[in-house]
Length: 590
Image (cartoon, rainbow, N blue to C red; front, top):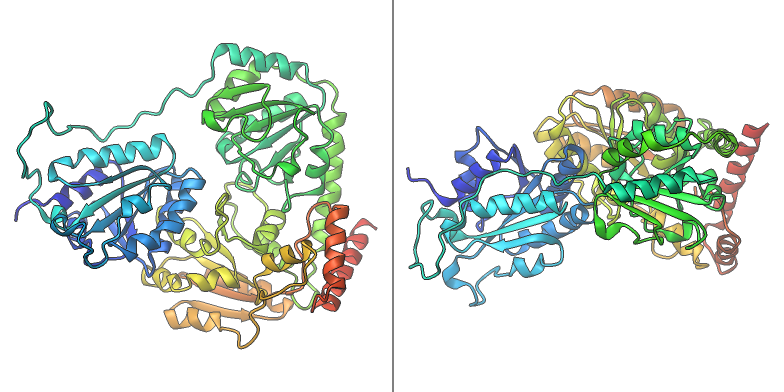
């Protein structure tokens, strides 16, 4: 049997260390499927139910491993379905390769069935974007695509027409007229030097040694450098604020952290941003600038591996272009220890008070079930190396505040795209990457319903993931966002009949439980986490529990009140929940 071009494509991916491809077959990629079949001993194909999920799985795989994630879709609609998951990878700087099919070259431009120019569609999302038009372009374009994805921390795309897929490998159908031979490359990528220039380091040392009240804002770019971040905090007496994607940089019980920032953050972090003269930004491009100091009010030292992100959010006095870990290793020996610890101690005391307030909201007696209690139960029962895959919505608030990073725990979500639905596909992608770890997906009912067919995927592959649905039977985040604008909620509650997600899980062959009473919750979660295959716990939570910001501004309170005055339909239930929350926190202070 002759070697076909698709064999070369898949074999080269294996040479790059790719061991998994997520996707769905189609008549636009049957040649590539044959390439996968012939390389099945080196690369496994994970069959999913929706291409969007395949792209999410590839994105999560890349985020969790640092290795390139690969997804595959057919021509036309298949490639279109990948787009949302690819944007998730692009906006969170995860290296992903999308491979798509295309009609054979002889009919391109004729309006053939499913003829969609996917290279044009992906022009905005991809850092490398090519259609293969000659078998001799492979494997060189594979090398270039993978290299670009790693170097630019983004999405690469290869679109392969049907006839090219099945052509003889290395076939040369055309006369050569250029003074060049087809590219001959190797599956090799070397990271660029990651240490800033000496002059920039010296400037940073002078600025930090002269600083008074300092804060550190750590993002996911500081992942893996947690020990160094804490060493910096200790030396400068500087509290550490964490962006939500950077939640796992240091432990949530670290004596240096004030937790998150922004609407999902903590009151101490909010206060801290107005109580400093120096801000150190580590591997973060935190977009919500209303929660940062006023421009010009503080000196900013920013460390980021990407030059274009330095100075994007605040004027930066000292830009340091480099890897966070390598840069801190160069800086720390040259920094003086700040003898005055009062600034750090002030926020350590504030965090003790904040943690008590959050613990008070984790009330096991509340009925309907408090979503804070649900998140706290997951936190209590999960292993110390668990991976939590969080969806977008109110659940991100509950996870940010009530699921603690400790030990080897990791935390992933759609950080910058903030799309709904990735929780379950993320868990599948990460469980494939780390089969021995506990992987949990925390989703809202709205996000789960979008890609719930992938629970069947988890069952087919026997993946021991646990899906927990924070079911408020609503698009909860949008509900509260409407009210904070001063508008009564509209079009956000699903009503009846409610879907039986537990029955769906059981029908797929997994564990399924529906929980409506707080006394049943801990036992059901414990059983689900111990289940040897996929498990789902659908938890009916209080739909009127608002994800309040760490500090409520006067303007926010005024708009919230306006929504009540303008006819908010569930104002009595919301007011009752808010009253219960306040009473619980006052008891915690007593």
